[in-house]
Image (tube, rainbow, N blue to C red; front, side, top):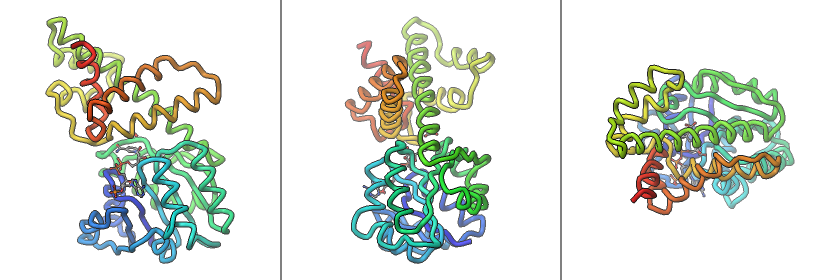
Length: 289
Ligand SMILES: NC(=O)C1=CN([C@@H]2O[C@H](COP(=O)(O)OP(=O)(O)OC[C@H]3O[C@@H](n4cnc5c(N)ncnc54)[C@H](OP(=O)(O)O)[C@@H]3O)[C@@H](O)[C@H]2O)C=CC1
Ligand SMILES: O=CC(=O)O
């Protein structure tokens, strides 16, 4: 199977590498073209624009930072819309809001193409290990044709119905994750400031009902004030913002998520946006000083 891949950031690089390792022919494009070099060393072909990738491939996957990037890659000069046509499928796995996904769907289907949104849950390591959770929605036949690729990228693929449902589900999952990360950060700082060992707190949490891979994976490095980016904080804040907008639309009161969003915004204002989202603990420390 031949696929195109647009966007070689933390996730896109790991995902396209996995496809290559599993025998897919992959044609890549990235805004910063030099990031394609490593993929080329592993057998990928490169194109100079999203439109060229679409022209070459029957199926193209995108993994871009945010709604602005997702829209730009489709609508701008040299973008997806210039070549999408009947017989081609476009699968956008970026985390965006439903409105963005619906706009892209309308434009793609308006030209005779087919569209699936497929945001993923799981970070850099699950992407490297092909253990993502895929939250897909849109054209059912394209979803089914995408299963061989989804099976390489992820451990489970959900089909959630109409376009927008994948985006909404992803934002809800990440809203919960961002709120949890804030409660966790406050607990670690509070333990430390109360004269307790935050490493012992990790051991206690791990033995009880709150044990989870996120606390287990991020806790030790947070206790060392180390935040190598797996999931950039700026993207987590984008997800909180988009989830809060979904809450507004549905008149769901979300004070916990709103407070968590403030902490991520604070962390961004401290210049921590490109670090891992666990760096939000620095905003908790800062607010105490
Ligand atoms: N990292 C993670 O753990 C996870 C991330 N996600 C989601 O996946 C998506 C990608 O995340 P991640 O790989 O971490 O992000 P990165 O910041 O590492 O990569 C972002 C990608 O988007 C591209 N991009 C940004 N702006 C534009 C633009 N205007 N036009 C074209 N391309 C653009 C970047 O290109 P360039 O290299 O030129 O900057 C890069 O390829 C995000 O929506 C994120 O929320 C979902 C699950 C987990
Ligand atoms: O979107 C981030 C993730 O870890 O999932």
